[in-house]
Length: 70
Image 1 (spheres, helix red, strand yellow):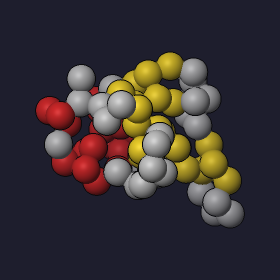
Image 2 (tube, rainbow, N blue to C red):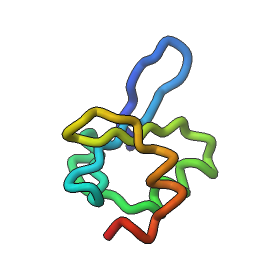
Image 3 (tube, rainbow, N blue to C red):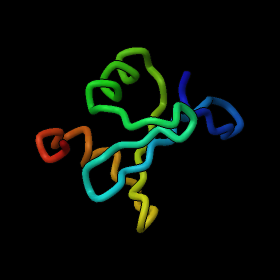
Image 4 (cartoon, rainbow, N blue to C red):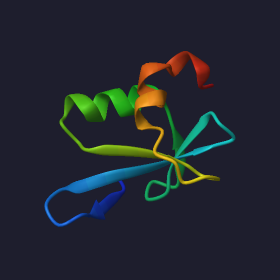
């Protein structure tokens, strides 16, 4: 199960990044890994990662630099 956000055409999985490194899926109510994000990408699931404090879209940053996440 993923966090769907109805944007009119597709379900978007919205993930929040906490403390600059932890990824949280509010629908699953658990922290997830970058590997989860990669798996969803392979399944063509639209993903957005937002910083919990600023609301900034950090999707590309998270996917491009997974070694910065714990």
